[in-house]
Length: 566
Image (cartoon, rainbow, N blue to C red; front, side):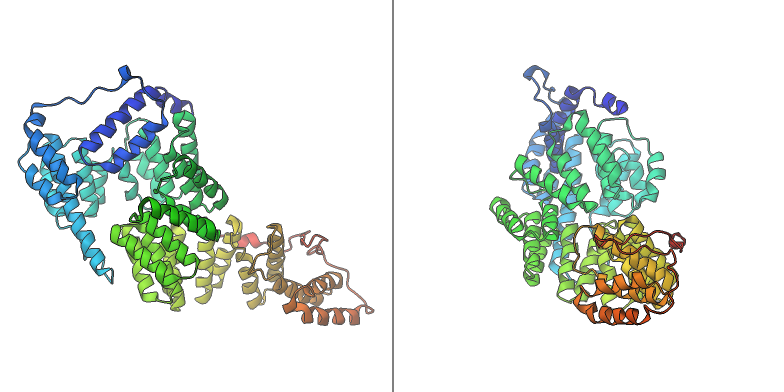
């Protein structure tokens, strides 16, 4: 923390730098950068008039290009990129040169997006591309070799290289830019990758690191970074609040994420950024009134924003109107074909409509936008599971698991795939690992117990069923899918076969509380009563009887389930 404070010791100087960044970004049409810097600057204390940073020096070349640059910038702001580039051709100032190259790049991106939207059907990867990229690379490479690129144009060169999948070259060019995080594809690369970089020791590095940790699902590290930034003086930053909320969303801490998004809405009621993520949380909690209110509110603010379309899509999906939901996700993609969330959510809707072919295509588009989107990999696995293609399922679930190694849903899905492929040992490892990392759906132990039961491993099955019952009752609420009666039925028979009649009787009595197990429970009680008068073997110290609060307690562990841990 001391090191961080030393970097953030002069908040006045940081405010001045942010004001300069805002001005420089606006001049070059980098609107998102200007917006980000503006939000951070607003979170810091206001500067007195005599401490405001001076305007940037105006060179002779800037004066020479002023008229052309002013005209081109007006066209650029109206998204007339080809027209802007035409009037900037031949300008010699660095500012004009950047805007000239950037206009050409955005023109190519716009044409690519238009072509993508027009088809929105099966597209092979790489079939639609920005035709301007290769020319831009050749021209920028010459300037780079001659050392004639400033920081902004160097950033653009890095973007061009990345778009051409020249990752090694783009890292070298991109080393001082925050968009570097998109080049790191898995957690294992992080340590080696960061050690290979020599990033400047500047306050903005902490924002970059926090963002990268969030992108790589290293949420604990991301939250610590953001907490340090808050303590360093950015406690009023809505950007940081939104990023922390997204981080909690990524680890499925839904209540904490909802609380932060509600706080964000109070501070910035007309904010649209990240509201699609907020709607995902409301969807998961089935909060229809709140989701309806959010959708109507965003329509009033701007109904043609991508986030608004996604929120409306989630609202219709929650109402099981999947055709309407898919329509709004398509609208979002017409506005921004690189919207990752819209592709993934549209894939979910096609799954609901049993249109597996369209779902696969949507998920593949999502992966093309961002290979780190575990939801798309997981969705592809589910789709191929419906198509009864377990080898494909296994491949895609493995990809999802690599991105989310501690997500029990990925592990359970992997276990099911292994089970279908008759790889029972691997399936057991996955189910036990899912339980060990915290089974959010409370399904791993049940599947593990049933697998042991199928393999006639009765002791292991009994232990898993006991742990399952403990897990279900410890969560404090009865889950809809809970199969407590299944576990009690098996344990009753298990105890009976092992002549543990007291435990068998208690399980049978509990079976009578469930409609689907009542008759079997009564039959077992009758069997027990018939042998009560016979010689009874003393109970082995395997499991303690169920306690009065419905929670089974294990005394001794006769089996070593740790052996199933991968």
